[in-house]
Image 1 (tube, rainbow, N blue to C red):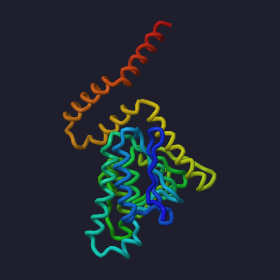
Image 2 (image 1 turned 90 degrees about the vertical axis):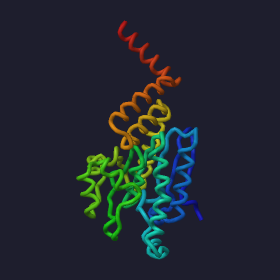
Image 3 (image 1 turned 135 degrees about the vertical axis):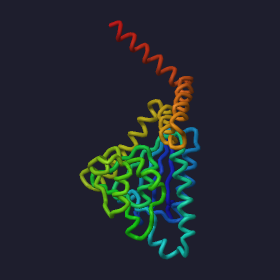
Image 4 (image 1 turned 45 degrees about the horizontal axis):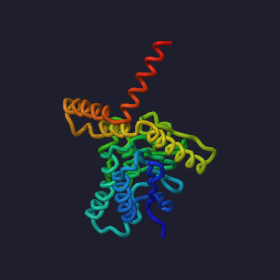
Length: 266
């Protein structure tokens, strides 16, 4: 039996691959626990400066495994408990100072939308479709959808998505601000590979640049709801002061000043 999620770390980039392709990477108990453990490990490692979330098979994530819900769960408390396990991984990613990029090829619906929303930058394919669809089976949004969706695309658009059975096209998702980029391939398989490659390229950009500063910028924005405006200003002031003390920032500031002086002298 293959592992439900694959974790690898290469040159400061952690890759989390959802690995239930036969079920469109829908979450069951095994994937939920593996997701929690892998995300906590990735965000706890000092050698990880960027994280990529991608998926095996034809789609990114179909949310919860409805077939397993129907055949194995006897009460709502079991579903609540399962969501809590997955939420631990979502919190690990969103609360960390490590930028996360999602490579969401194919279809992303239900709780899969929450997994996408816990990334800080999302890449999809031109053939991708994204939506809520919870109410189609009488359920309500979970896995951070109600927490993150309105913040990402605005309350009115979030309501349009969760109160209809609409699936956004890749172009619509980009226009709404739900995803950052859509790439096109010759066929579905090639497109999935291009989505993964582009996400890896973004992660490499973070690692090869001011990785610590990108991570702190992510933290400042993600943690903003917990602070008042005045507190946020104070946190920004503290963060930029701390960044200025790092060797990386010192070197970059010095290089920028030297380049500016040279340009002015020319």
